[in-house]
Image (cartoon, rainbow, N blue to C red):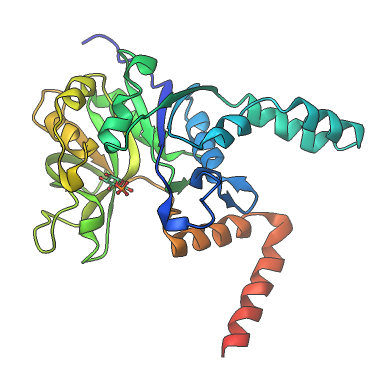
Length: 297
Ligand code: G1P
């Protein structure tokens, strides 16, 4: 087998309307909502960069200019910060604009996650690539989640998706996979999968959560995928085609803390968890939590 290519490119679908966070997302893309003071999409791109990814294709829709602007060079802002003697913050702003090469592609109709990823086909080309969903944050400083999946792909040539066991009754919110989990490696060779199964029909409680490393053979499967759950072209249905192919598909129990920042409570939890990691905020945040709890009791 020819040596497998390293994963250098990633797709981040960001064309959604963000209805769960209205009115905050009426004029601001949900990807720009901050976790403490960093937009969620910057945290996601940071994870990709730490895993060696150099190029990011953002799939966006109308009203998403703020994302491109955020990763652009803000000359006037940096100049003003430097003139005021705040070169540390100016350097930080400059780093944001040089994190990755960013390509922005429009998804012209909301036809589903599979369709959104397919919009990146020309920009990615014939090489393995990562997909990161902005609603899921995977916090693991030394070993970024998407890098853990890239290693599985590099070793096996298979596609790899992050999985976690969800509480009973939550299966209908996810793509659910089935297979035998090897507890020692945290890997599951996937046998079956279904997008958002109806209550009582899920083949397991192992859900796909927001991180994928896919071989380029997925493009053909995506192009052939017909609308599925919710009338949308589903990424899960294209992945199902990989399961039956020679390459195959692994589910990987990724090491790290996952936050569902697409859910109000998950978003608040992520904010608190990331604030607690900041030495300059930690003590004050703990004190604030104690104060709020005491006021309730
Ligand atoms: C998407 C995928 C689903 C996956 C989920 C993970 O669903 O379609 O398979 O389990 O992300 O967060 P969405 O949450 O966009 O409806």
